[in-house]
Image 1 (tube, one colour):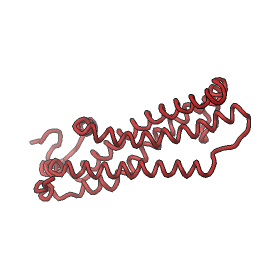
Image 2: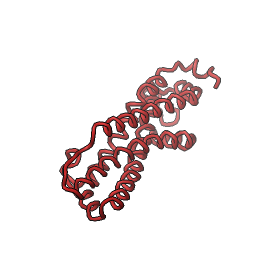
Image 3: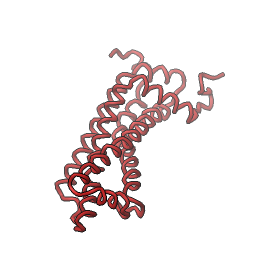
Image 4: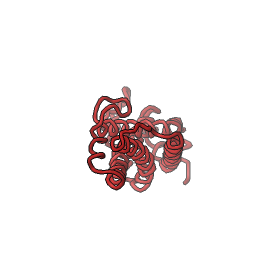
Length: 210
């Protein structure tokens, strides 16, 4: 006997099924997911633009100035705001899905399955936000470099190695750093909401009224 993909007795949730359910949840709540993604995009775009602009300036002038202290603080605050926004959004998502979570638990879903859904959703949103934030930040840095210096300086900055400790071109190292940071930020910010959702009592969740 089975309920969907969950087999009673073993209670296993295949990764493909978890991924499908997660994408369906994102589709159903596209506007909220888009707003959450936007907060990640802004934070990552700001980080990429600051790092890349500093690299362009170094390539154009030959002077190694690095990032100033106030820029680090601005970067930290922007990422912190993004993290708070993600946490708030995921808490709202839990409230919206109380009955859905209760139903899944009554059908045999375990705490770890619910946890998987929310963390997988935050990872997907973080990955998309990281990529889009990288693109926007890179475009902003290129425009800045072209206007203040030259496209030659921009090209040298994009191909320079050693940025962020990676021995690969800056354009690639920044992409990797952006995606990894965005996913980690999303997961960390979603830990409490996901844990809270996983620990919901099925009976209480089914009685909950929004």
